[in-house]
Image (cartoon, rainbow, N blue to C red; front, top):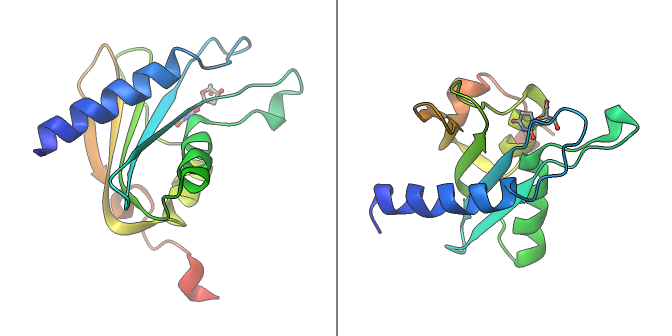
Length: 134
Ligand code: THU
């Protein structure tokens, strides 16, 4: 598969998950898709809650789907959301991705009415703390 074909598949998986996002409070539906080390794509959406702080982002939903489905490492991430600005992972999600991805792994952030932004994990979370520190 070419990188264009991979990104098309990731985009479609992220968008399918985003359509099912539970975001009644922010109205900001987000989808995330992961290409994992088992060559499968795992997707997730944000899940908000009436007790606002306990809502989940889309990225940990996709990570949980990866682990439950048998993947162990993240090879590429694609995040989609509304608007024109790239929907970049929040700080906490960068750290959650860090747990399962090497520094050079690329994260595509896409506000679906705009242009996708491709950055490495190391660009998004430089000098990061990880399992090897412990
Ligand atoms: N959100 C995500 O799911 N992922 C991101 O990378 C950015 C923000 C969600 C959290 C909340 O449900 C909504 O977007 C608005 O912040």
